Length: 179
Image (cartoon, rainbow, N blue to C red; front, side):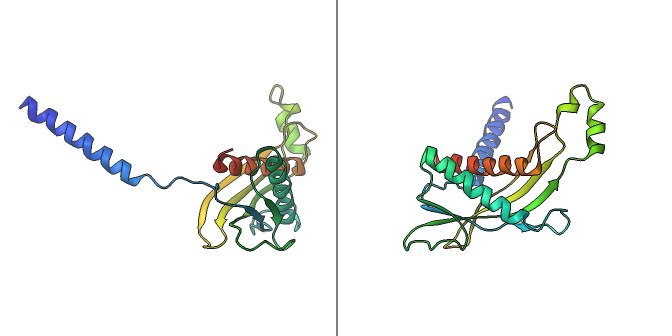
């Protein structure tokens, strides 16, 4: 009786291990891509943001990709969509997204934060976007993520939070590029 109980437990564990190895997805990698093209971000209809926020974050992502590429050699070319011609035969990673949050600092939020010890020095600005990394040739979404960043100090602006958000996106690319 004891032996059949142990056999049943081992059998169940074996089945679980085999099925879990089948369920694991393919690993995300941007290693094969030569060119990164950043598309102007869309705007969520419920996000109170200026009309140029989508264009501005796209410019900041291109800048941060160039900065990281200088350091780690990520891509041969990083451009905003429609600005330059892409050479033939290059594998293109398309980065597009949607602005989800655009929160400016307000006096009311600062007053509430000042009630927290040390809170008067923290920022209430925030920026969030949903990113999609797409193989341009096939149109297949390789990876998608939501990134949110905030200001650190009370003088920080939404533009600062956007820069930190773009830097986080560049770090995601560097991680999946293997750098």
